[in-house]
Amino acid sequence: MQRTLILLKPDAVQRRMMGRLVTRFEDKGLNFVAMKLMRVTPELAKQHYAEHIEKGWYPTLEAFITGGPVLAAVLEGLEAITVVRDMLGATSGLAAAPGTIRGDYSSSRQMNLVHGSDGPEAAEREIALYFQASELCDHTPTIVPWLRAADE
Image (tube, rainbow, N blue to C red; front, side, top):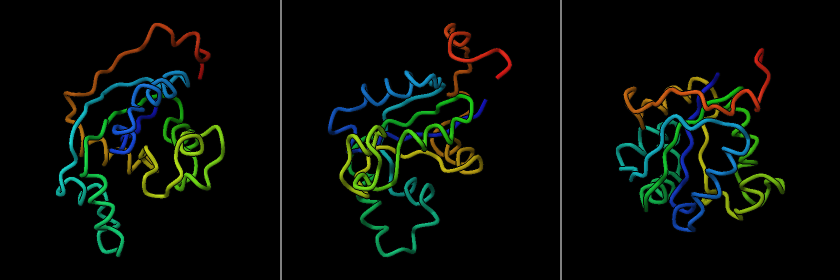
């Protein structure tokens, strides 16, 4: 099993899309092991997007991500990082394929609804930024045998 962080960004929250986006991840068979509605502070934004702080567009990103509540969650599943990123689609909603979250609901590069970790190291670092270990709820849904073979 692999874990990844997702953030339903302020645009998704303001557009009242949390339920339908959570449903898409659950329908795919991913397991939520943590979730909370929160505000990203400027300090947390700087930690999360540390590799972008020196870029000219960073202030706009920080203003966006701190501009309203986000729904932070940890998803677990087989190849969860790749599965989630494929579900999200290209960063720009204009370039994202139909059927992906961004392809179906976004027409912006920045206001692209959902963040997903881009690799195992990023997932581990990002999960630790948003959740304490005690907030992760390990469990196996009873439906798991109907979602994948026992040897997967």
